[in-house]
Length: 335
Image 1 (cartoon, rainbow, N blue to C red):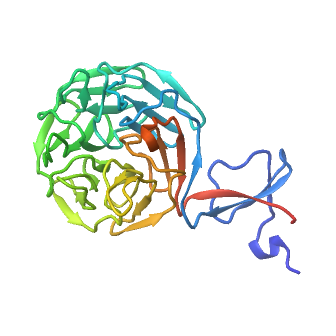
Image 2 (cartoon, rainbow, N blue to C red; image 1 turned 60 degrees about the vertical axis):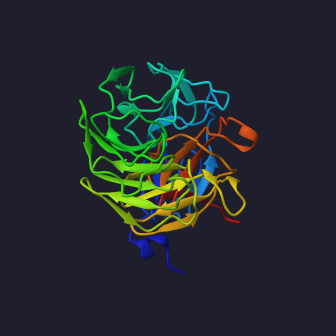
Image 3 (cartoon, helix red, strand yellow; image 1 turned 135 degrees about the horizontal axis):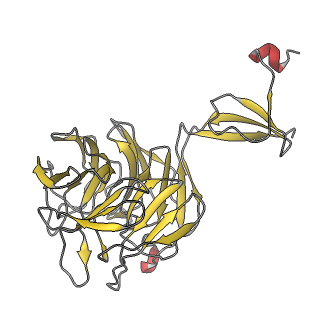
């Protein structure tokens, strides 16, 4: 029988800890845990339980990655609006400095990182909708220049606090798009279809707007190339209020939301986007509407937190997504 070295051309590595960035097919022996391990790629997506957020609420903003996330704002069905900000380290949430203005239903997007984020628009208490924009520097929120058009239930995209995109919103079904350059908002080309409560992800030059409500719930998807919006292939499920994740318009996912048909109500459905088509994938652990209004993460490593479950329950649950093609470590046994 051929040895491992004869097959692979090298001996199995002996390491005191698992490598931080293993490649597919790499095999090693962990001398601390005394187990044989290897690296492979996942073939399908899955959600797993993470640490619970401290304050259960829906319609939050969020930014960052699966292991370094920021959650801010939000509201409850009773009309309570929150200024709470919490930081996630991949295991637990910690309260940090609050927003300047408590609000919910603000931008639905991945709006930066854990140390450089933007929050704009939304609904305040007392109402109505606001044009306020706040910038996060890793420690504090600071009010900066307002949106040109006050609105709520809008979506957005952005890599950090210096470059973002705001689109759609309510009241009604707004089609306006605005671009943030780090100082001011400028109106740019409109959405093809005005709507609210949509999912958004990407950056200011490469974004996705999917699903939402334009008088009735839709499955429409539009892609932004930095200048114009273009209609592309629809999602499989018609819904509004979904969460999202993705770093540009070529790959991402949406999850949860509210579906009118066939059964109606909150859903846990997940769909992944490959730049051309949406594909149904593994569901969240349960139905959830208006979890964080942002996409913290990528198509293979994302996070969902908070939201509204059945019977208006304000969830504290966090779920972590590992998508198809992600690198995972496997432990080998002799059984």
